[in-house]
Length: 362
Image (cartoon, rainbow, N blue to C red; front, side):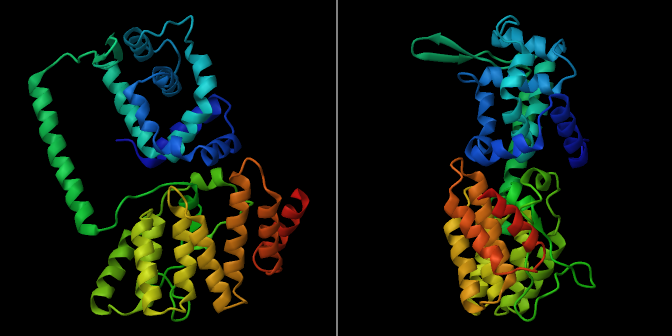
């Protein structure tokens, strides 16, 4: 069974084989988040999707003479003269590599689809008439079909029950979440060390580190911490720090909606809890469609409560810089806002180095 480490190594080998830089991957992901999020739609094979799948199969294979590629080419009607896998990989390589990194589901779908093609069960969309679309049928083994259907129903209901019971909602995985830093843990090795009476704070990675580098990190496994605080909350329902710490655990796992709910509950209990606002800002930025305005508002609230809060200025500077970095127009105003934030905390962490770097971009 392939592990996350195996997947990461495989994708990195693909990236190196086709000479695709981490910078190009990071930039593509930043500018095309919705496309990456919905990339699984290519398996419907509409329009140019067949070409993308051929490129993907080639990238996953050792060479273009792979039998899987030949089988798919025959079924999809993509001749070698007009649809060279190498040319298609050059055209779609950055997009597909970015998707393999930032959308882990695509890797699993691609591997499974490759196995299906190899077994002789490809499905290719063809036009049967002006108003008719048909799918090339699979060779049918009804025992396999019914067994697969039964297994799907079981897995579906198990997944549904888990989602209903844990109440954590959809899990996200993106560069922002991957770049967050887990707070120090307590002596028990499970719970986070609280900052005073307010709760711990998630770390915000330096903007000089790079998004693509952060994406190489595995999503934190803090399920034990989540369970720890869930149990504690049952006996101390009005303890804001408990909600803050569980919210951090949810954030690091990618359950940002559940995290936002916990941070909001902490704010309801303690309206001046700066850690709750700070961490909620980090969670807002972790959503697939980042709620930047809300994140900025929360960080400014922290600064209003405590004008000397260096962490809030640092997070605000990183946030503005990410906006600047992801905007193709590179607005000077965003860069100036980022500089302004870092100028308030000279001597804090690597703020001086960041300030000098950003100054040269003006």
